[in-house]
Image (tube, rainbow, N blue to C red; front, top):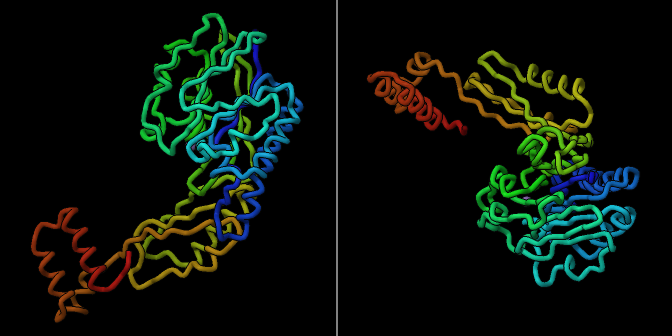
Length: 352
Ligand SMILES: [Mn+2]
C-alpha cells in the first residue's frame, strides 16, 4: 500500500506580518493565497491525505474564516484533511472549530488526548491531538504506541519546545510509527531523514522566520517515504549584516542596501544590521533607507571607536578625563577595556 500526502503547518491565517509597513496587507493576503495554492495542488494531484499540523489560524478563527477554509477543503473531496489545532488557535468550549459543520473529508482532532483515525481501505492510521491550552508541557507524543502492526502508522505532532509538547523523534519512531509529520517550529526541515519532518510555516509569519518556506509533498509505504519540500516564493526574510569601521560613510551603507534591493530576487525582504566600530562623532541617519520598500528595519549595533589620548587631552580637567586616567592605571584586559568604553559612552551621553 502506498499513500500520497501533502503536509502543511503553521499557516497562521489572519496574521498581518510587518504591521505598519506599506506591504503588510499584501503579506496578509499572501498567506491566504498560498493556502489556496496548496489546495489547488491537492485538487490536481489528488493525494490521499492533506496533513495540517496546527496553527492554521494566527488566533481564534472567526466563523467567516472557517467558512472560507471549509469551502477550500470541499474542493478536494477525495483527499482526507487531517486537521490538528495548535497553540495559537487552541480549542475552547466555544470554539467555532467544534461546532462548524465541516465537509465530510475533514477529520478534526477534537481532543487534547491522543486520538486515532483509521482508514482500513488504505491500511493506514493517523494519530494526533489538538491543543486545548496555550501551553502543554507533557511529553504525550513520546508515549503513544500504534495499535495496528502492518499498517502505515503516522503521527501528526504540534510542538517540540519545552512549553509545547516536547518530543523525541527517535523515541516516537522506536515506538513503531512509520512517519512523523510535525509543526510548530517555523523553520522547516527533516527531523529524521525520510521519516520525520518539521514542516515549517507555509509562509514566514514575521521577520525572524528567515529562510525558505513552503509545503511538503510525497508518498509513504511501510518500507519508507519519498517526500520533497516545495518552496512558496512570495516572501523570504533575510538578515544582512554590514561591517562598519571608523571610515564608513552613510553613502556606502546606502549603496550597499540599494545593491541588495536590485540584485536579490523581488520576493526577498531585509532586516539590515550594522555591526562594528564607528567614528563616535558620526551618527548615521538611515531613516530614508528604513522606509524603503522591502526593508523591514535597520538595527545599528555599533560601538564608538574612541581615541582615548585625544579624549584625555580634550577633557583633562573634567570627570571624563579623570575617569579615563583612573581606568588606564590598571591592566587593560577585555573587561576593563569594555568598562572604559561603557563609562565613556555614559559620560558623553551616547545611547548604545
Ligand atoms: Mn505553534
